[in-house]
Image (cartoon, rainbow, N blue to C red):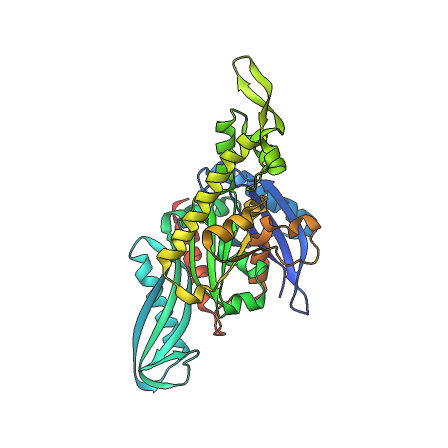
Length: 407
C-alpha cells in the first residue's frame, strides 16, 4: 500500500499526518502538521475561509515533511449531528444461495432509507444476519435460503453538513476518500482488543464536542455526540472570572481540577481581568475557579449518561468506560465519570505510532491516530468485501461532481 493522508478537523486543532503501512502491518508516519483550529465550532464548519486556511497550513506542513503531495484524505466526522440507528432489512432470496451482490443490495437499502430523511449514511455496518428463521449468522454468502434479514448499524449525518465538509476540502484541492466517525476512530487507537470484544463505552472529550462509541464483539454498535466540550469550560471560566479566553484556558490547564481540598480557599491564583482601565491584575481563590469548572464537567458527563440510557443497549455496552480526548486530562475527571456513570473508568491514551514525536501520544490525539489505524485496515466490517464502492467514497464522489457542476 502506498502513502495515505489522514486529516482530523477538530474544534481546537486541525492535524494532518501522512503515513504508510509497513510490511508488518503497522503504520509509520512520514510527515505531520498541526494548526490551531479556525472556522469550526461544535464539530461543524461555520466559516469556510477560516477552516480552509487552517487545513491548508496543516496539510502543507505534513506534505513538506513527507515530501509528497496529497490528493485525498481519510477525515474524521463530527459534523452534521451524527446519529446511530439500527435498521432491520429483509431481502428475498427465493431458495438460491446468497451472494455478495445480495449483501451489497441490503447495505444499499439501509443507506437509501437515510437519504430520504435529508441525511447521508457514513457507515453502514452489518452486525449480523438472519437466514430464514436462523439468527446470528456471521457470513451468509453461499448459504441457501428463502429470505435474508440483516441488522444494520447505520451512522448518519446531515447531508448539508457533509456537503460543507466536501466543499471545504475541495477548496483545499483535496478529496474526502473516506469519512470515519470521530469517536469510533478514537476507539480504534485507545481501546485494547479485549475491550473492543467484551463491550466498552469510549467517551472522547474534545474541545467542542463530547462523543461516545460503544464497541461489542469488535463491532461499533452505537455512537452519539453532544455539542459540549472543553471549550465550554474555558468559556464559563472567562465569563465567571471576567478574564480573556487565553487566560481562562491557561488557568484551566495549570490549576483546573474536579477534586477540591481545604487549601483551595486560601490558594490565590493571579489573572488579568477585564476592567474599566483596560486589563488589571487580580487574584482569585482557587476554590472559585473549581466551583465554575465542576458543574459544567458534571453536566457533560450526565448528558452522556442520559444518551447511553436512551440508547438502551443493555449488557452489550459492558461495564467498562474509557475516557480519552484532550478534555479528559483534567484532574479528577476519571473519578467524576466513575461516580456519575456508575461504571469502571480508565483514562485511554492512543497506541504509539512510529515516526511521531511523544506529544502525539496524548489523549487529545486519539481520534487522529485512530484514522491511521483505519487507513491500515482496522475497524472495517468483518466481511472482507468492500462496501465502500456504494458507500462513503460514492457519497463524496457525488459531492465533488455536484461541486464541479456549479463552480
